[in-house]
Amino acid sequence: MNDARTQERKARRAHRPGAALAALAAAQFTVMVATSVVNVALPQIRAGVGLSDTGTTWVVNAYGLAFGALLLAGGRAADLLGRRRVLGAGLGLFAVASVVAGLATGPGLLIAARAAQGLAAAAIAPAALALAMDQFPPGPKRVKALGVWGAVSGAGGAGGVLLGGLLTQAGGWPWIFHAVALGAVLVLAAVVALVPKATRPEPGRFDLLGTATVTLALTCLVWGLTSARGDGWTDTRVLGALGLAALLLGAFTVIERRRPYALIPPGLLSTGRVAAGNLLMALLGSVWIALFFFLPLYQQQVLGSGPLATGAGQLPLAAASMLGATLAPRISRRIGAPATVTGSLLTEAAGLLWLGTISADGSYLADLLVPTLLVGLGLGVALVQLTALAVDGVPRQDAGVAGGLVNTTRQVGGAIGLAALATLAGSVTTHAHQPPLEALTSGYRTAFTVSAALLAATAVLALPLTRRARGALPLAGAAPMVRPRRDRSTDGAPVA
Image 1 (cartoon, helix red, strand yellow):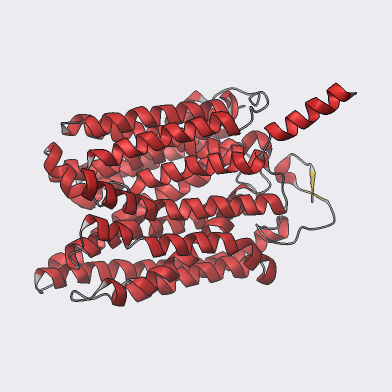
Image 2: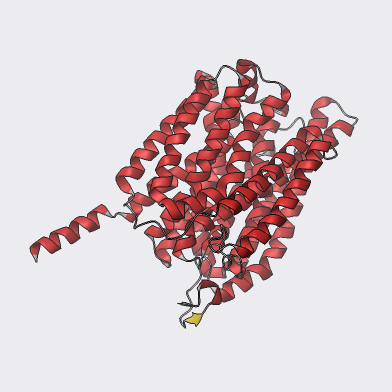
């Protein structure tokens, strides 16, 4: 009897959901930091490694391409091979690839290391999200966990810019990658110590044909979109890549209908909450990734800020994003999930519209501080609500692929948005009959204004979509329904 009680107390002490969530959120933060950490240091990296214009672009693109193309495969691998195991392997590869990137002396090795970082991130992100959901059953505690997740995701992009500026100015660009490697090692140690060993991996087989088809499709899509920024939308290779992506995505749809172990389970997208969450996350991502691309450029190229000042300028945005993510469940309980999603998107749109008034002779305090606070606040709330929408009601055995899917839609949406907005901004700058700084500012103003319009349209779309989703299952922070009902999308099991 006493032995049983002792074992029970040891088990309770061993399973500390809060500590496990902290380790998993740190893994997510590491992935998001790597997305933007090189942006500020690109001029120094270019000089240090001898990059061409195309090579400089691919220092950023190689990471995003591998990350976006392999997320679905990473999520399914986490479900079938074990989430903790896949997360650990991803963090180990991430650390090694980061060290190699910091030691690179030529363009080829650096770009290859960035692609390896993206591959590792594609394993880390869905596995960490699925493990985080495993720690907390549906209810208030999961809502709080999603708030933490949204806070670190929103802060990761701004944190990467800050870290990149600080390390570049203090020790040179290689320290960006060495610091990320050290962080990955520390996170791996925390995961081993704090995240409990999960139950056996989910039964099933890996859909090799579906995985290969969708991975190649996403690779062609992201490559075509990112190449369009430099080569133009009418370039033969860009059009060929986009056309091949469309064909492969069509083939993937046909293949998945006939596979007993489909990469994306047939019922996953049949419910309004998952489809709505991923659609809205893609639209949010199309603006989010571009935001952390254009802001540092405006600060450095127009305002003349150094790497450290540029990075420090992202701190208010990161703080506002974390505050928004923390407040999201409380706001949703008070005014309802549909109003919360719509209001957060409109808040972010208002900040971007304000950024659309920047000037060539402006300053950080006058032109950026207040609008970036609005952007950060809206972004934090929206991330929590849309992540909850995209994973709520998903059966446990599909949690990894659901996490991979929502990350995929965000990354692919970001690639599409960045390619389109960068092309638009470049066109405006090229055709502006103004002095260079004025022309650059005109391009950035256009990008921010169009981003604001896109988010406002997304907010209008979100209202009916989240209402339908809420009719099926409450979003984060909403009051749970009392009567169980039968939900066909979860294998006929009653849900509350």
